[in-house]
Length: 437
Ligand code: GDP
Ligand code: IMO
Ligand code: MG
Image (cartoon, rainbow, N blue to C red):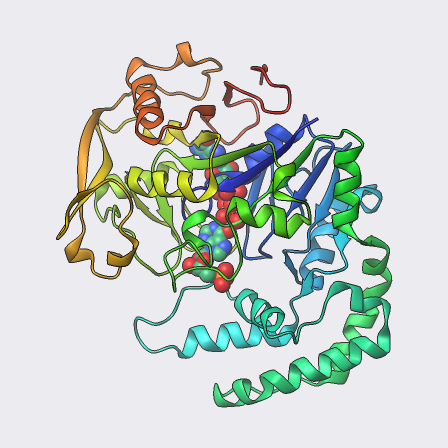
């Protein structure tokens, strides 16, 4: 048995969906521990593609218990829509292997409204570029102790009181942003109409996960977003509102940190970011276009084109530090095929000299932090059919070795395409040895 946390090492969209799906073949339980429908985790099985937003990425493994942990914010309509979509795809048995924390907070229409109004009325340069899914306002309600929790769906009178209180809290903001305040009665009755489908899923998920661990089961803790979008450790204020780092796995799943055996960070072989905020290795040229087009870098949730850039090793070292990575999963290596020279940022030149760590306090002064690049040889061969390292061109193997040396973290897995089979598994923490993909 093993408990493994997987988190994004960059600004999200690193390929968490694919990697969690791969490793979940070896896990009995998978827990999403943070975030909400701002996430879009892509699963590709054969020719079928599914993007999950709230459901854990183990959902296509029929024997896996899928848990939405208490660190999440859950939009009931999005959740029911996802369950219906899976039902249409033939996964009708879903309810029996789905558990929703009764302590997860609900995203309600006024959160989505405030998020959208704020983004659309923000002065130039101040919009975060959020997904407009209500994430920030829902976590604000949680922090100011005025939220509605999934467990409130069991108690209609309490639910109505909570909705009234939350709406009273938001009404002045909604009015000041030019919006109209929704009716509490309509909101509460819509929620009560959904309750018969949601209440049967409610569990004390902390107890459930702890019991699974005690029973010797293998558990995957699935992060959302990425380290540089983390509320505490990211490029604040251009971040999300939850804990996206490995520390958040313990809080969001409701287990002690010492129960987690392995922490894996996922990084692309380059960097992307969607939304506003600093991105020191961003490219605005033909190489950036190559990464966007070959890597299909368009948001899974919003369809927005993702910003693209070279791999940023100081940022990756920083992510390794704040998460305590045991190993890395390297994704989208295939996307680099065709670039004759690859640049990798290894340090930053700052007024204090050359630094190897990400100078977070300078991120809003890009003129004071100049990326230092080394050039590595590119390759022209397609990588999708490689199943072992030796089948990769030597330049691709050198790229992986360089990454390991510079970050001090071993690469556990290399992904060379979106499909399950397009994977080179070097280490599987659930079985403690290399496994065939
Ligand atoms: P997540 O949010 O971290 O789960 O990542 P997304 O699903 O938002 O974005 C990753 C995208 O890259 C998806 O379209 C995946 O199907 C795709 N993908 C994952 N791994 C690979 C890979 O190794 N190569 C290529 N070409 N695509 C990949
Ligand atoms: P996955 O789990 C990439 C970004 C938004 C915005 C900022 C705040 O698929 O990797 P929010 O709606 O959370 O208040 O937006 O965070 N963002 C993501 N970017 N992948 C994600 O999730 C993201 N979730 C939020 O674009 O910049
Ligand atoms: Mg995504």
